[in-house]
Amino acid sequence: MIMLTSAVRRGATEKFIVGDMPKGSYEVNDGAAISNAMRFAKESRADAVKLEGGISMAERIAAITKSGIPVFGHIGLTPQSAVASGGYRVIGRESGEGQRVTEDALAVQEAGAVAVLLEALPQHSHRR
Image (cartoon, rainbow, N blue to C red; front, side):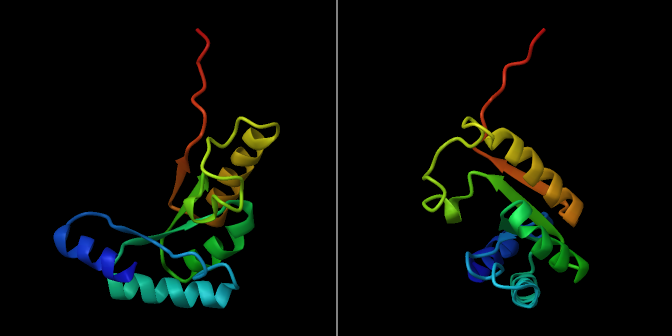
């Protein structure tokens, strides 16, 4: 991912680039998450890193953010862990999932994420 993000940076020198932290590079503990995020941001020249997870990753997001690296949170369908969480499907239709997505978004925000990627959530109709 460092190599791919570096290539994007070379082609888009004036854009805000977000690098996707690989599965296993941030889940273990805060120290590993900070070290890997620092390496990723430094070597790829990404402006921010993205990691999957809501409430479960709030501590990691806070630690990385406090170290000076902007973080994008990613909730809803999280491709790196989709198989473990029931496969590739819209998240939020099952009982309680909508509330969990809301709680995840708030946890990511409170942890200091600069943005939250919401993937594969149901479209809600708006009443007029």
